[in-house]
Image (cartoon, rainbow, N blue to C red; front, top):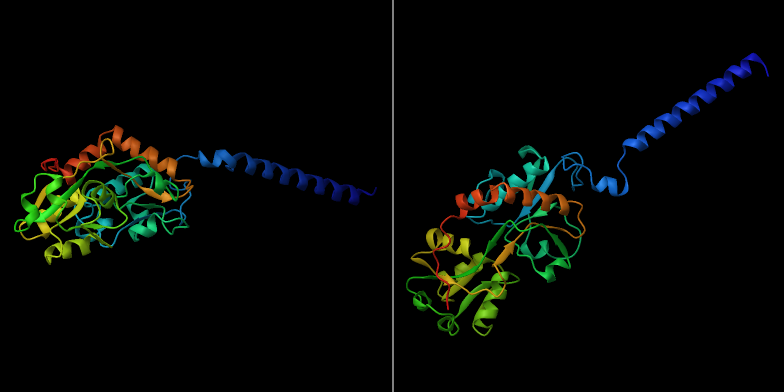
Length: 288
């Protein structure tokens, strides 16, 4: 072998060795399999629909006390503030949180989503778990009856007194499930949104509506003329209605978001936000 050929062969072997070192180094630091799923919950490591951003969806419109002034990006309102706290816990800055809107029904339907998290008072149910994932709950509430002072429902103190009155409720919600269980379906008027139910109450088409308790206090105090929270409906589920983040089925974020919610509960943040935005909601009597 000539000296030139020996030099060419040595150079080639050196190149192969260098490439092997680079390849092994890359493999050592690239998360794969279960290691990828256990990467730290930081902005760069989490799998999101848009790299480096956390896309959170809510309803349109979104009502107080859950979201103030229909502006979730402000962080004002209980759910807006909880979402901000969870995003921070996950390692996202406020500038890297993107808010979008979705309908309630589409959020809990099977299929791909264009958001990472969704919150608009979704209660955890076994049926919904077939189509989507849930985080651990960030709030537990009950369902309440709202009316106006001039309505026949205003003086009701028992469930039996409401069973013969027209009552409105939003479809496909826990409010509907509890109303149907407690009042029956014969006198229920079902609407596509709480907006529509409120409009029906204002127009005298129904004598009362059923919504979650914080929304009931908001409607009675800020939306309805002479509004009144008649009382809370008994709930067959122990501890009330658990509200949680909805995530796409099988989402890699379900674990990290649950961990974030649990941490906020443990350090008292959820209690503080509840007092700030939902304080005073224990005043409605439970209807017998």
